[in-house]
Length: 412
Ligand SMILES: Cc1ncc(COP(=O)(O)O)c(C=O)c1O
Image (cartoon, rainbow, N blue to C red; front, side, top):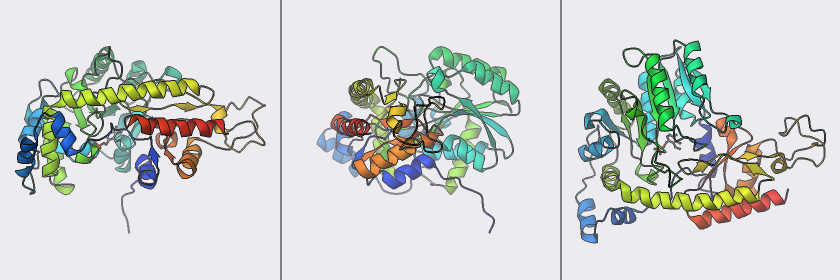
C-alpha cells in the first residue's frame, strides 16, 4: 500500500525508550515544571481565587484560534504584533508541524540551521522538500556564520524558506541583536514576502539568559516584522505539561495553519489555556524563578566540566537549560587493546588502539541501562562525539547525575 514515509524522530524515540524508566534524567530541555498550585501562587492568586479561576473552566472545545486573553498575552511578547496574528497550538511541536505542512513545496529547497531539533527540517524533507544546511560548527565555538548564510542563499536562489532556532537546542547559542539585524538585512536582500524568502524562527528557548549582565535575546520579529515565530510555555517557562504553544506571523500564514489544525487537534485543552494565560500574565515572576534555577545549576555544571576536562570540553551555553559537551578520547575508553572499527579519536595518533565505545550513543546507552543516568546522545543531532545535558531540574538531581557520570568516566 503506498504511503508517505515518516522518518523516525531520533530525540523523541530516545526519550520514548528511556525517559520514564531511567532514574536520573539529566537530558531534559525544560526548567523543572510546577504544579498548578505553585504556578498560581507565583501569579499571586490566593486559595479562593485559585479555586474560583479553575472552578469556572468548562471542559468543552475552546475557540480553535485560542483563548482571546491568551492570544493577547502572546501578542505582547512580540512588540507591534496584534492578537489576530497569533494562533494557539498544542505546544511548539504542533506549531512547527502546521507550518511545515502549510509552507512546504515538494521539490523545493529550503535553508535550515544544523544541528537542530530534527522536526524543523524532517517534516518538510519527508514531504519532498530538500534541506540545505546552514551549519553551526564546534570549531567556530558554535557561533552562527552569517557570511556562510549569505553564500548559501546566493548558491540556492530557489530556496524560499529559512528555518532557524535561537536560542539554540542543543548548544544554547544565540544570535546577538547585531547579528539578528545582519540576518534580517541578508533576508531582505534576498526578498521577503511576496514569493521571497520567509523566515521561520523557532524561539521556544527565549527568556532564560544565563548571564545576569546580558539581556535576554530579542525576537527576530523586532528586526523582521514578517518573520513567522513559534514558541511555547514548555522550556523557559517550565510548563511542558500544559502543551501550549503558538505561531505568530503574517495573517495569511495564520489563516492557513488555522485551517490545517482542523485536522490535527481542533483546539487545545481548556484547562491548559487558562493556566497558560495566567503564566504569561505573570511572566516576570515565572521567568525569575526559572532563571534562578538555571543560573544556580549552570554553576554546578561548569564546575563539573572543569573537573572532568580530561574527558570532555564544551562551549558554555548562553541561553536556555541545555549544553552540548564534546567527548574527548579518554571518555571513549581509548587506549586499551585493539581499535574498534569506526571508533572516535585522532586517527593519526598511533598510541590510540581501542575504544570500548564507538560514539556518544554507546556511552549514553550504557549510562541509562547500567548507571540509571539519562543523557541525550549527539547522534540524535548527527554529532556523534557530543551529548546533550539538561540542567533545568532540581539541583540535587543534577548533582547526583553528574556524580554518576564522573564516576563512570573515572572507571573507564
Ligand atoms: C527547538 C524545539 N522546538 C520545539 C520543541 C517542542 O516543544 P513543545 O511542543 O513542548 O513546545 C522542542 C522540544 O524539545 C524544541 O527543542
